[in-house]
Image 1: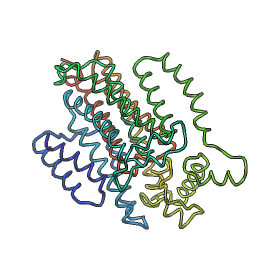
Image 2: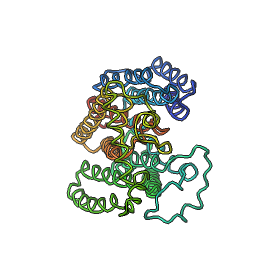
Image 3: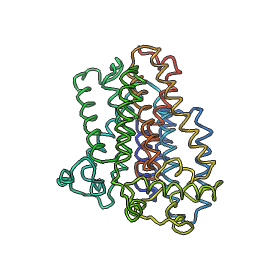
Image 4: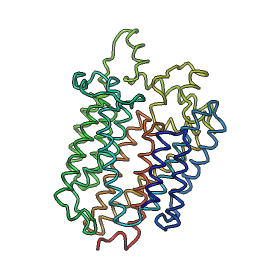
Length: 410
């Protein structure tokens, strides 16, 4: 356990403090200890080719950038995320380790939800649904505060997992089996915490993504009629949420919207600039994390308070060029396919807690992919490692589902 713990600590450290060498030192030490002790066992996967291309394009980004310090921080996050993904995949090669990984992700989500009350700059939330007086008791203790949309991304990714586990059986081999009363209580608390924090973020994109994750969870769990009924409700409510931006009718009000990050007009302006930039730098991108700087220098777009393209796919293209975007899309596509195959294989093997883990992680990834259409907060922020850990868990589940001894519950 020491090896994977060191790798995990290093990955988190490298995302929070990307300029520090200590994260890489912990990652290297953890991999060495894990491989020597045979706790981390490298293996070939379908993800290898797109992962290698992503890593290589990170190096190209360092060569192409005009702002090396900024780009190095983002490349460090990308490389450490890939290492974290593969470390989970290589380590979680048994039912017990997969189960502990799942509960670790739930604990991480609950911990982030608790920290949000003192780390999120709630004053950046829009005047929407929840009165501002509700946020008054929350003290901001972090000098480098977290944006509400970043916290919303983390919540939509991790929230479906405790929901799936709440309705699943507990593996007999799980060491938590003796505490059956504690398991649903912890999962319910984690679900309420993450759901409540997501609501407090006032992220309309987060709400829609969470709805997509819930729909995926219901569909993958076999509750198709309920999923279709919820879809109808989401379409109606979603149309209202997207249109709720207080759009004005005068030219002055429309111009104000184009520079207000909470409006769709602002995002359309950003996306237009990102597409323009991608056509100008299709092979290398402009360097990870430099979209706003390059846009201010070369394009009629200046916005430094809200960095990025507000779309994770455009962000990957602008950062890494078309080769990097293709590799990222291939990686995501393979992960979704592997997660779906794992859920099906575990379902054929009979009632299993691992099927719930697969359904929960896959639903969270689907929710995050939907949220990525309107934001890029899990690509270039301190929370960037979370999707890689979930993707590593899905890949490990796929690997386990293909292993007879691992897939079948004793």
